[in-house]
Length: 556
Image 1 (cartoon, rainbow, N blue to C red):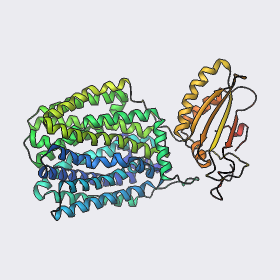
Image 2: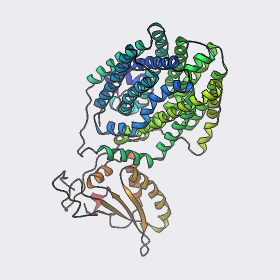
Image 3: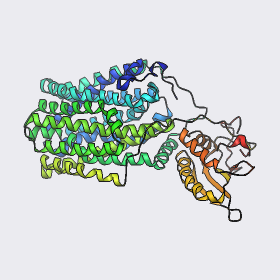
Image 4: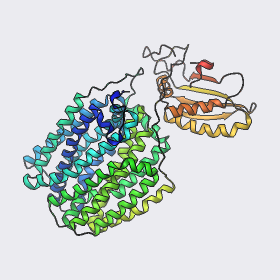
C-alpha cells in the first residue's frame, strides 16, 4: 500500500489531482502516449481499408487491439496486485513499444499484409492489456482517495484530448507520409511516459505475508468478483454496452469512406469529433454524478448514444455527422466513466487490479466481439443498416436496469486496519491446512430471523475474501445457539482472509457480534483438518499463531 504525498490532500474539483507533481508529470506524458496510440490507430485502420475492401477485415483491426484485454485481463490484474505497479506498467509499455517498432520496420520494408497488420496490432494490444490494470489501480497511489474520481476523469480527459487531436494528426500524417510514419510516431511517443514512470519514486509498505502464487491470485480475484453483486452488475452492463455500442467506433472508417465518400483526412476529422465529445463528457462527469444516480446516468447515456448513432447512419453531410459524433463521444465517455468509477470505488486495495482487469475484460470483450459482428453485418446489409441496428439496441438497453440496476456508490470503502495473528500452540507452517473456523453465537430467539438475514451478507464477504464451504447452523436442543462454519485452504490463506476486510465489512462483522447475548464471549475455534499430513517442513512460520476463547480474540 502506498501513501500519496500530503501536498495533494487539498482537492479542487477536477483539476485537484494536478497539484500532485508525480500525477501531473505522468498525466502529461500519458497525453503524448495516448496521442501516439490514436495516430497509430488511424494508420492501421486506413492501411487495412486500402489492403482489404471487406468490412469485416476493417472492423477486425479494433478486435485485434481489444481482444488481448479480454484474454489476459485476469492474469494482468493479478500481476498488478502482486508486484510493484510501477514496474509492471514499465514492462508493459516496453512490450507495446517493441510491437510498434516491429510494425514500423515491417511496413518500412513493405512486408505488411492484412494478417501481419492484425498480428502486430494484437502484440501492441497485449502490452496495453497488461498495462491497464496496473495503470488504473495505481491512480489511488498517486493521489488521495477523495481525489480518485477526479484523477480517473483526468486520465480520460488525457485520452480524449489525444482522441480529439490524434485522429486529425493521424489523417494528415497518413495522407502525407503513409501509415509507416504513423506507426513510427506511436513508437516514439511511448518514451516520455516510460521516463515519467521511471522517475516516479513509489513508496510501498511491504506485506508481512508472502505473496500469493499467480494461479491462486487469479482464483482469489474471480472469487471476489463472483461474491460481489455490485461489481458483477457493472461488468454485465459494461459488456452489453460495449457489444451493442461499439459499432460506431468499429465502422468509423467505413462511415468516412462509404457514407461521406471521404479519404484518410475525413476519417481523422470524424474521429476527432468523437474525441472532442469524449473530452466534454469527461469534464462533466462530476456534475453528472451529482445530478443523477448511476442507473439514471447509464440510461440517459444509452438513449442519447442511440439517437447520435442513428443520426450518423442517416447523415451524408460531414458537418452533421461530426455534430452527431460529438454527442456520441460525450455520452459514450460518460457511460464508461460511470462504470469505471463504480468498479474503482467498490474494490478494496488488495484486489483492485483484478477488479479493474475484469472490468476491462468485460468492456473490451464486448467491444471486440461486437466489432467482429458489426463487420459481418455490414458486409451483408451495409453500413447504414448496421448502425441503425446498433441505435435500436441502444434504445432498448435501459430495460436491463429492471433486473441489473447499477449500484449506488457514494464513498470509497477503505481498508480496515491489520489484525494481529491469533495465537496457536500446534506447530504449523504457512501451507498447513485446510483450516476450519467455527464461531458460536448465542442469539435471542426473537432476533433469530434478523440474525439469519444478516449472516447472508456475512457469507458474501467471507467468501469473497477467501473462505469456502460457508454454512450457518442452529442447535436443535439449544435454539439460542448458532454456529457459523467455513474453511480456508491453508493457514496463510486464513491470515490473508482475515486481513482483507474493508471498514464496512468489519462494521458488518460487529453487527453480527452485537446479536450475541449472555455472560460468555463468542466462542471461536480454529482447527487443522489434517493435523499431521499437512505440516510440510520448515517454511514460513508465524511468531504468534489458534484455538483461544476470550474477548481479546473476538476478531475472526
